[in-house]
Image (cartoon, rainbow, N blue to C red):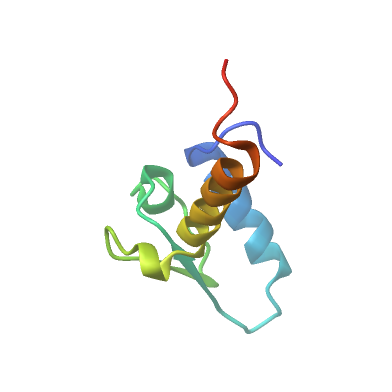
Length: 84
């Protein structure tokens, strides 16, 4: 778990994924359009291909579905978000 989502964290994530890919295999990493996922500054290992989802493709992004479920549970179960 990293403290922030950023380019450095993505680079560490790619290195870890690359390290665990079987010899001779190739991984396709499906990502959303976050800047750190698609930055030209990323050094993508040769055994990984990054495949970005199209913009505004909520139905293809499982995180969007999880977030909507979370929002529903918070509103229905707790009557809304906690006040700060």
